[in-house]
Length: 508
Image 1 (cartoon, rainbow, N blue to C red):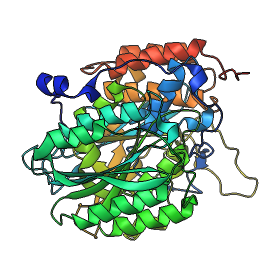
Image 2: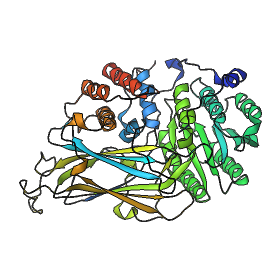
Image 3: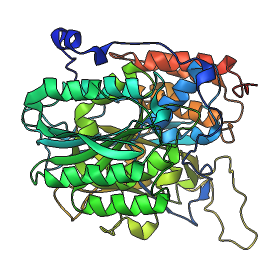
Image 4: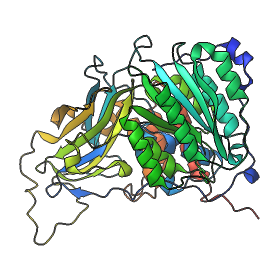
């Protein structure tokens, strides 16, 4: 993970680096036209009827940043905007790392009491990716595809995008290459593929960008991919980075058509990441569709600090995958687990047979990235959530001896240049269990507090009377090492949620 900040000299040379903190007045933001990609919360499943849970890894963080932006406006976020797994995975966790890029993943499991439901337990699955060294990472062939339509004019849109991309330029190596395509009414190439050694030329091009016109996003995507293909680096990373509020209104507006185009380009080795900005007309649904099918991440940039997190501190994980099509399959032991529920990942669920089908697309993990998943389980003999059927199979007796394993975790992934997946597995057994919540690993406890916060924001269907004060209590005790202040900021967001309005008032 990179942590090098831009030099003071360069910051002084380009105005796009001004660390502006202005908030756009509420009157300048549209209201009520945001579109979100989400699904109903996962329900509890009976382990003996559905023993296997399969999903694609998700390392996007857009939902967390959007939630923060809403709370900073003193408004609770729409429930549909809250994807709990993205809140959890916003934070880095100190999991044990794998030893080499040839075996880039290691699973860390833990079992501990569920703090919001007596008698239930949580299973934490943490995956740590191998961290590439700066000297060993592949070259980058990047195309910035920048929305310069009229809706991008406010300070928290195109000006923030310009600052963000300028920061990213400072993190690249001289042998990397950048091109810039803009779209507004008509798409055009603002910068032909250029070596990062010509940094001043690239930054000057970014600084000259202005907003105006309608949005020909589809044509812009075609031109951006054309430049990426023209400069394709077979041994490097080839990626289009789309920066937009998602308000496509000219050209191909059908999401499925755009999705199909991005998928075909993915098969050629050209990936897509999305940086979303703005609110009121933010098209999260489109950003998620394009990024998920383009083997990229979807991030939401609400402040210059978030840009610094995504494009400076986490530049390696954002741009350079160490594993693609990463899937997790958990088989539950019905002699130990009566019921289970995956927390979040509703838009990433897969069929059981998708797990071993290498043709099925899944999420990517970048250099040094951590991914966390939580299962809420009812142990055999615990307080059941789902009633037994009259004619169903009988549950095991609650006083039967406890088996050694709760579940078995399997992870499939492909190395970046391989089309054949590799399988790694680990049991979730009694050796992974902690009798008291307070004895669980610190990172597991903090992730639990974030999960509870997300569940409460979505309506609290499964968290009972567990409230914001309970979240604060757990998160404060598990804050731990917080070098960038992300966890401290989370505590402030929880406090903000306690007093936030249910809905932004409509303007006359």
